[in-house]
Length: 56
Image (cartoon, rainbow, N blue to C red; front, side):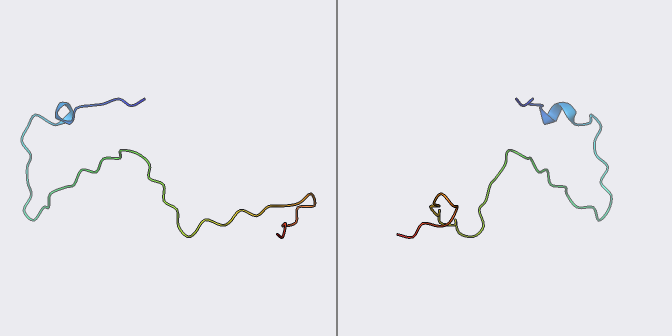
């Protein structure tokens, strides 16, 4: 189970000092897991009692 925390509760109360030439930051949120499959799915091969492929 996840715990949800408000970002505004964690922000500092004082204003930010911006240095000359500084760039804005990006906030990235991890929201889950993404599964990807690369390549093709191999065909299932039926095996006989000895573990050898069955030919039809």
